[in-house]
Image (tube, one colour):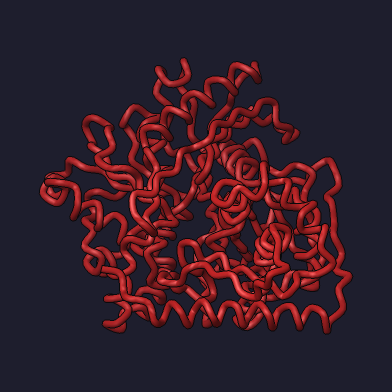
Length: 494
């Protein structure tokens, strides 16, 4: 069996798979979110480690039998700085959603440096990525710059942090997919780029060693699980989901709807640079080679549904959004742009904030719930348009996974707005499944990632007319234009 660790934005999970890809044990604990200032988002790295340890031990005990190896997948870009000798974090982790370094990225953009960064990394200049987060930690933790120069500190994404703890501090490593999300990693060279390290003022000494996604990263310390277990597969969550869907051919595309929404399309064995502000990235690297991808990121998907529940108190549970949305015959002209932490692709506006337009005295909680679910589909449509404009093949089927896909109303609306079939696999945990399959591939237990599932998927076919679709999209574009107009007039962050 394979132990898959899935450390996400809102929870930490451990799943034990057998080689028929059935989940033999699943353990999960929620992760507390910290919002110290507007636009800032943090996690407690120690809490993440403790939750990982507890869920893994419980899952191993529940599954019984022998664990052959470990696969690890993680929330990407979220950044930790820690003491190399003690293994203690020096600050809360800065989460991928965090916008505190927007001014740094804006200054680099104003200097005309974005094309240079994008050519080397495939990424736009945005606080979303790890480089400016690492620099912020080094500049704002007392003595960190000096200590990093002496080789006393480690910095990295959550996979690096967990591997360091799992191996008792013996391994400071990451994989190519996580490295490709830092703005410090060359897509062609597949190594840290010295020019980018200088640009962002990040010393190479704090960074992890980079390995393929299916490789031997190291062995867990015997005190962790009572025996040595090889860590054999690592990938950032969206790339792990690409592997979980078995999207190994150019053109195969998946969309994961969790806290955010992430479209990723396999573009083959060479990097593809987007002209429409999608992201070039590494899909995964296995013993047979590298698969590159184009990605579009939606910052708020499931988190917008959580806002209805936790922020507004309009629903008691996320699933309650479905009957509310379905209770209306149309959206009543109400649109919500969920730019709670800025807008992702293809806009990449860090200063944008959320907005609701089209409210009348007749608007109800149902209109807001429907507007949140509709926004997920509209944002996906924007990503597919950008993918098409870049010359990538438009996927004939949208392979979806993630918590939002349990909402059948939202999936039907997605198929209607995108005018494409939507396919949801019977087993939903694609990120964990991808990590497990990468580990199995690294162990030599399987030969390919595209292992079919034993149960058929659920499919939603489009049924909306073209004129209705275009009318809805026109309303959405007007709402986005309004949010961007407000953002242009807002004071710049200090």
